[in-house]
View (tube, rainbow, N blue to C red):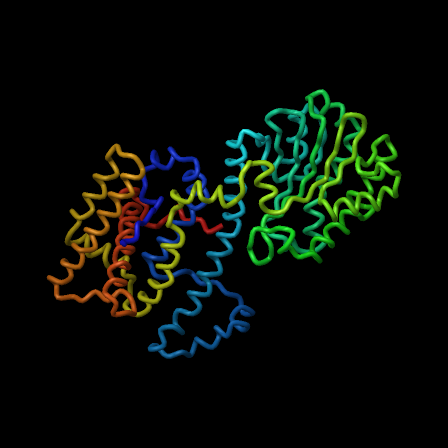
Length: 436
């Protein structure tokens, strides 16, 4: 069965704006896609490596590589391109994940997102409490049926780093606790909030699996609990609150408070202190515990709900750019640029069908089906165009005709994207490219 490509860059804005999930994807990749297209068009990058990079990787040795060693000639380019791509993409993934999580939570009917990545000053002002603290909280949620607010620190991985990372994970909780008896508890009660949750949510283990009790790194978990139990950290603030009328709910038999608090954290990852009707709950949620608690569904269900509108822009253009840079070293220009320039010069009418499609009032599924039909017809037309010229198109290092044809269809998507950028948007320098 033919592959069906879903390229956001080629969609009209109105179709993207009709689907919140597509909007989230597009907002996080819209400045990176032009960078990939620029590389596909130019076949090069301004490679910037310091000498330690060159020495450690051995890339210094390619200065004397002969011109026939094409892999040697593109080694620096590939290395630098891959490195800046991952440096650029990593933060985008984190931002996209948080935005998607907020979207799912807001639509769950269980909790509302009050603030994402906000300062304590901004967050607590929402509850009529004034403070000047600038520590940031990843997520603040308000239960729809009322009575509870959740301050949540999200970690994509259990591999959170050393003491500095642990400190940034908990510093806002250490600030919130003493504020409770400086008027914050009263403000919360005035807002009908009788429970404050301080939550650490860890989503994946070091092998990138959804984390649970069976596959987590016990040593890292115990290290986190030990850090929480330091006097200068959460335990120190809890101990002070215990001296101001709070008690540990689980300590019904009058045991040692510190031992009970630590034991509950390690065994249940959940411990609660209370003063009259007001509770403060500390929780460490793993993987699907977080999603079920606040979104009412597990991660697999969330993924299944959005998989049908997952765009191909990044993997498609990135993988093509790796190959096309090598082509440019061999032939002087990329296949993308050669096809674009030849079609513009001798067969520009080929782009009309695509432009007509962009102006049609159809839904997104129909648009994607039509786009895939168009690139299939373009691929056949291009083959005929070069056959008449007596030019053999050899696009990949394979004699497999089906693979070559599939790659030609991908090239057609890239050529259309270049045409849209240069000829329709008038951006011949790909100025909207932002790696950072």
